[in-house]
Image: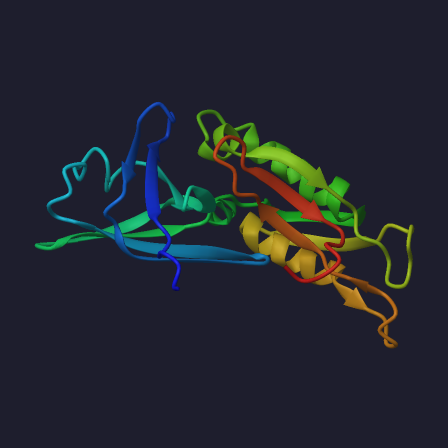
Length: 216
């Protein structure tokens, strides 16, 4: 006997979180998320859905997306853009990691013999969230930011020297994760460094982990 197909629902919330809209008739729902990369989603809302309006799916204001399958939270992000046609609206979303591309890290700023987590990533994060009326600071919680180890070590924290030239924070994080990840020639030692913004309806959290143990 075949099991019943899952029931999907899409919840959209405005920036304040005070107004939310649940769409249970959405179709063509698809989503994906990656390690150290921005994830995406897509869904369609038919033209005859009574909840469809310029307020519930805005094209000029921030709107958060939460996707549920049989009541289980599956994906989170925000509306990137929408496409209207006579059959309804197609919504395209990106995960909150896309936020990290909105912020620059300073031109010709030198980090000399600095620990990757506590002395590069954490100070830059604190500067970003200090901006007034900023969606990143308002919506994202600062979580765990760890210092990667030197290759082959279980305690010596890696230091690097790097000058940044106004690249965005996301690009810098990918570079730092790349500098942190390593494997010994024999394969006996490895370090899988990951940055993320967790999925959470109440408190999505930014983390930079020295080693997640295995690729997610």
